[in-house]
Amino acid sequence: MSRVAWVTGASSGLGAAVALKLADDGWTVIVSARRAEALQTVADRRPGKIHALPLDVTDRVAVADAVGRIESGHGPLDLALLNAGTHVPMRAVDFSADTVRRLMEVNVMGTANGLEAVLPRFLERRGGIIGIVASVAGYRGLPTASAYAASKAALIAMAEALKPELTAAGVGLKLINPGFVRTPLTDRNDFPMPFLMEVDAAAEALVRGLETGGFEIVFPRRMKWAMKILRALPYCPYFKITRRML
Image (cartoon, rainbow, N blue to C red; front, side):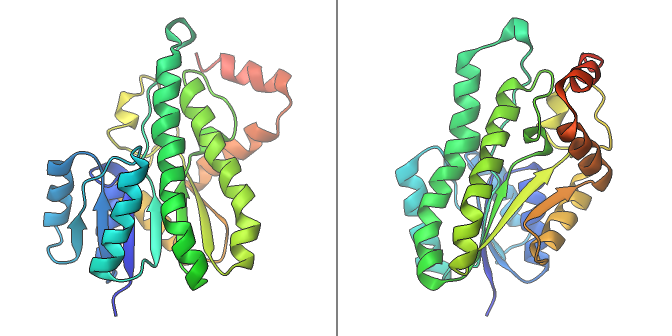
């Protein structure tokens, strides 16, 4: 029987690329996002293998209903990839609580709604894999990313907190921290993006990481080590580096 995957934020970018890769690997893939037309375009690229299920991940009731519909129509989920997210660059002079609230609602609460919907099912079956897509931007605060980095740091901490319990219960949990990947979101950035990765290569790295036993999936590797070094630096040298990013 085909394995069943649910991918959120799959109307474009990394989510769409991962859905296509999973379908090519023999999975039955249900893709969700708010943009129904764009989502259907992704599904049409793999007819019969990818199925569109339009959804706003910030709607808690709708997310729970969607998971029920997926399992009643396609069978128990083997993988839930909670990838939906957004990014709005924000400089200090443009700081907006509304922007922070929007990113927290989509990036953090959208993921939390997905977790609430799938966890009881996975825990009851003592199986399945959950992928939480955060970002290396969650390692430390970077210029213009005060809202985005805060939301991704919250996801990293959430995944770290859940990991021991889920492992004991037989449920797999993967923390996915991409670096810069060429997508419509990174197209908004107005600064040089080191080690920029093409989306198909990023999708390949993500799917390959799901098949390993490790907790964290990070790509590209050069970005991984650069950010991990930054995370370990004391504040004085760290701020000297980030000031040069302005």
